[in-house]
Length: 335
Image 1: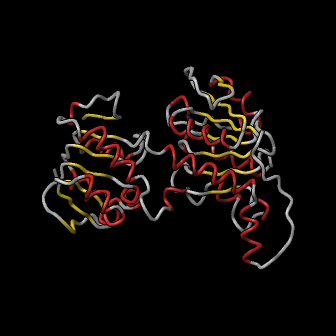
Image 2: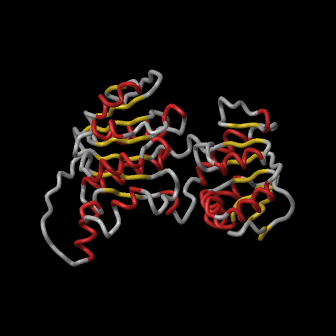
């Protein structure tokens, strides 16, 4: 088979890719979607984050890429959802498409605790003092033991967040539509009990997908229900959060801070209230109130590639007829 992958990703993971696809040919493309190695039409396309964000920024690039992979037997996306325009286009241009659901639990959960520790340990303030060559004592709690974390959406990512939380000896709560047993969960709430859960939490982690039921689940009432000392972290879909309500909650100090891995839209437009309240022209206290990071967009390397290759080999390589994959086993969408 001929496998299409970006030249950048191939160079970063050349040993892994060549060892995993010993009998296959690679078609490598550059940042303009030009073939720089190999020839012909690919049978398989691995769409790295690098390519996804390029597609978000350049219609010309994405149009050329779609033409290249049109009719592909199988396309593997990097991201978990299928609601974006780009994902829908990939689906329509391939015979079989799979999203990346299930491969991001560890890196995203790690991101969550990187941001929690960034806030609790006052990392930004320490870096600022270091850069200014200042030495002074800082008063910060710096402990997570016995604090409470609430997770909305208890799928793969939510469960990994819970596992890490328990390693810090935290109280772990979550919302989920269906009952689930977990040694890392102290209490499971129904979605209708969200506000009750929020009142108990020092940290709130949103892992919800984008569906009609989750649209702007986090709005004014939810932020008001949180503790003034609470931190809000969104690693779910941007559409599940009302950005105006979040901006207002930060401005009025209804919550302490927020870390955003996803927004709606991505990137935020210049008139977004979240950008306005964090601009240098506003009160400087708001600059440290919100932590805005698009973590995946800032990666220089597609960290999900090893997981995707392993996923492909264990779930697909052993099956001779790719179109007949069981969708219950693999998140496959057949055209």
